[in-house]
Length: 171
Image (cartoon, rainbow, N blue to C red; front, top):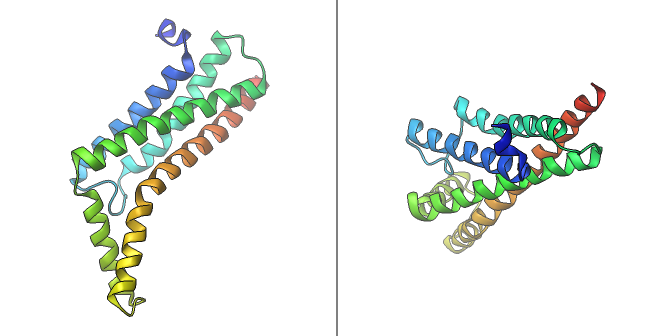
């Protein structure tokens, strides 16, 4: 296994993290029989989805510190950020595949859910304002999903790599 990760380790660990995250999403979708992009997430797999990048980045930084000539704190941080970005890229590719091919009714379900919540809140006085708000939320759904995925994975990559690099350097 070590020889596999010796060449381009950030790419391989990033893809591994992303694929494990996608596998987790498939498990959530299969076990709950619900669309993971619509509704609440309350299974243990939802929490596991947060732990996957953390564990992979910590293992990757430990690996790269042992098997490469990377000594600088900044280089270890950059390595964690690259893995976080690659994890986000794989997850975004899966999200787009899911929304447009696997479960093409996702956007319609999202729109219906927003319509029901907006009507229940009673904050819209006429149908035109309601329709405009629903259209705005529908237009923001994909960019929001993509930006959130990038932001959260970069944040996880940064924090995990800082903490792991501090522990590794203190040993």
